Length: 501
Image (tube, rainbow, N blue to C red; front, side, top):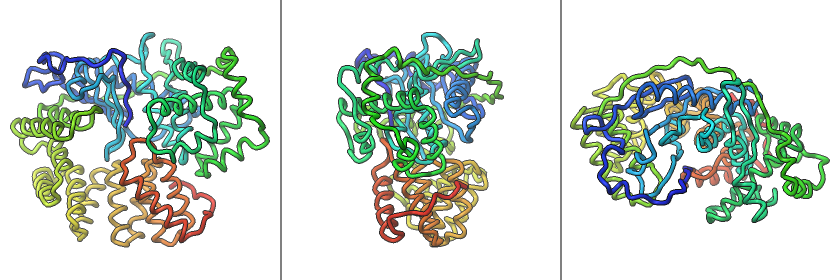
């Protein structure tokens, strides 16, 4: 999970009782909520419908602009969920720190929470760094099947300075990142060898972390400006699944003294603007689908924000808010799918969770999310019978584009030693989310069970490459333990990476 701090310090608006600034349910005097679906975004907001639709269009425009970094022909599938609050004060209700927004990943994919005028991307004064940074992470994971952390963060920082100029039908990429440039000028920068070790360093302090981010931006900016062809070759190799360090060495073979070049590059800042990129920006004419959200759905969104928003609030306090929101949702619309899903996922007792999931499926037999929740609850309760298989098959039937449902089915077949049956679902999950560490872990398990040892080892290495900040510790430990096991069984070297299905 990442988030951006505001510069105004902590405020006491949460204690003021000013309900007009809060993202309340309409039945409690709050603003009406709407959901706007575009081809690549689902925006849920308490902005008015017209402004929320404008936000969806501008998100599509931002996505189109960022894709120009890969030449414009790259257009991956998938959607991103957005929660967009009408002003910055509305977000303060859910945290004890002052933030502009944050990003995280749910089992259904990436989630970006924004507040205030974070939807006004094309205004001259618009600050869209958070949106651009997080969307770049999402897009780069779909483009680069393997990527070291310095490259992932460096690209995201490089592209967060994007400027959209729809009136001229152009986008500007690669502008100076003033904050990071000031950082490296004042405090120096990490060598490339140090950045290659970033993933192995664990949790860094604030100052050291900032230096790693700034250094990553600097190296990426330098490579694009001074070694554009070689850097493009490096990325193409990663797109084909090559091991990152070997791919870099191959792309930059024969280049000497990169460190010396970089030092001169930083000392002559005028040259750093030599490769600002202006690319064409096609107008976005995507169809939109807008619908009002019911009060119970708003309470589910609020509960989700109380649980996920960064801050120091203890889990006990967060759960108290969750219980209140869930009680309101149950009162206004018993059995609402969104509210019940959150209730199921936040219930620790596996058998109570299973009972809730069964009740949800009985009430909503045509909901793929309900069937997926039932399958997960059965698994948590230790039930790997035909009932779980049937639930997972029904989930993927109703949600063919769900990474969670497809990966869950593949994982079920892997756990029950039926890799032949899990292969198709694992391939579908990987096609939807080629940079998802959990999906790669499942894919490698299926390959290993099928006796495709070198491919399994390569896939598990790719999974390890994708373990960045915010990855749950349990998943990170599983990926590394499995990688060690495959290295011992399959040998230290893998065969050439297979084509991604």
